[in-house]
Length: 182
Image 1 (cartoon, rainbow, N blue to C red):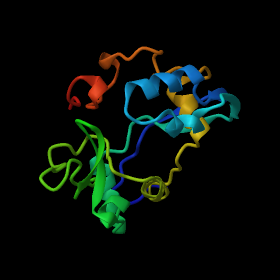
Image 2 (tube, rainbow, N blue to C red):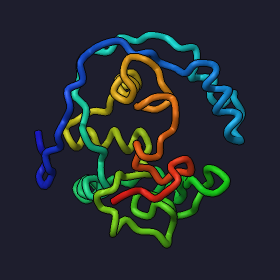
Image 3 (tube, rainbow, N blue to C red):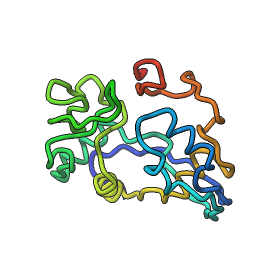
Image 4 (tube, one colour):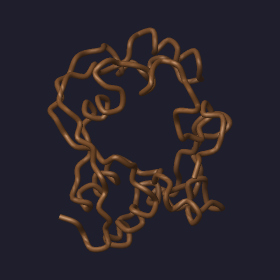
């Protein structure tokens, strides 16, 4: 059931199958070598194992700042980042706690989403996302569903393969080598 003021969001049908969950040991070694976090932080990614996934539907597009703003206006929801008055921002030396960073101000108090209403919402927890999904008459995908939709039945580092290609992602993170496209 659509809520007043909500726009219909297109969904994609994902057929059922089996997904390989978890990362290969060699990938954990690569991650640990590429950043300052120790390998033990990623140990819960192993061992790889098959998980059956029933057919499901998934939103085609990410939740935008505008859609999340409509949810907040309708419900008065306050995100965890707003309650604790900080968010994690990917900075020059990896993730850092930034006072005032939240979905309304992604980089902190001097930032705003005013010119990014159609960008994906950030600084939301699982609980925040669940509250939005319930309000929108949807549900979050399970971990297995998300993995299956993201890379198909066979594990690979990125949805398109095992080598990073900045031309295949709309990302502003360090590895993307640029700003998010509008």
